[in-house]
Image 1 (cartoon, helix red, strand yellow):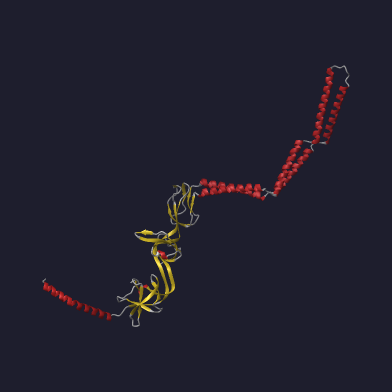
Image 2: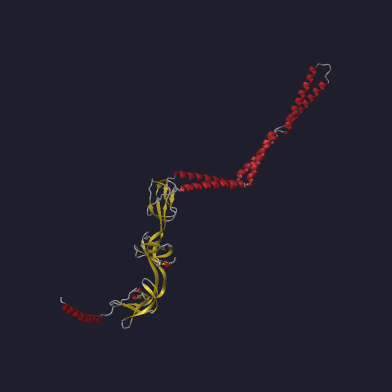
Length: 459
């Protein structure tokens, strides 16, 4: 193409563009004039508005425990299955326990025996025991009288006569020795002296016999008297009741037996694994006949009632949250269910995942819906502030100028047109916002659905 032709084409284009633009604008004006406005209206009223922070998380249990035995043993019973609900104290697993059970029963019998002995001591003697003790005293006293009355007066007179005769014989022998004629040989004198000695010996024996009969049998009398004292002491003991030392010994025996029973019970309990809290059997890692070692996690127990929700809150939002704040919780698996919750713990240490800093916030879920499951995904709207009777406007009717921090709404005029006016906002919720100034209750605002002047929240 030649230079002159190129210049000619450029002149034509330059002169034609204003004409084309004028024609398009005229058509647009004609079209706008002919089209009726499509205005969505809203009557300003009062209602509730909330400032909240939203966060996602999963439902978690408050407790999960891996349970194990403290002694080695072979599993003999498994009375539970995975998914079963249990209460505190329910038996979950049992080891072979025959020797431990026998030891417990023996300790139980021993305690019963010493307890009966203590009861006897505290109760004291009965009337039958006292009657028997009194009879024993009477019998012992009768025995003393019998021993003392065993020597008759005739026996004593006979012994005394024998003693007198022996004394006379001594005197006669002595007289014979004194009157013996002189001139006899020595042998005759020695015989007389021997007769005196024999008579004296017989007289001494007779004297001792008299004394014995006069005093009775000392050994027999002493033994009988000792039996009387013993029987009387037993009667006095029964009448006085148990002594404190006797009671203390009986109580100490019961305490020792109780301690032995407690130890036997503890040893027997170690062969049975019981639920420490109410929950669901979430895992079972053994079978009947298996030999398990101490510390091996044979069963897992999860406390699924109630659950709590742990959500990750952005570091900018977490500063607005304090414990005790209410929340509304929705679950992906149960979209029709809204659960109440309360913030009960805020982590002190942040987590950083791919450069995003957040804090774990735990919410107590105040619900016992049986459909709730551990691990369900949930969203929590933590209510920072709320007004129940505020002048509110839906967010889609508000235009925000973020650069200036201003807010605007379109006020419906009598001729059907919209006039954008400034308003002052208070709480800004997810769906509606509070209007503090610029509007009155009953005012009508709107948005033009057909035009390009649709105002949106955040625009």
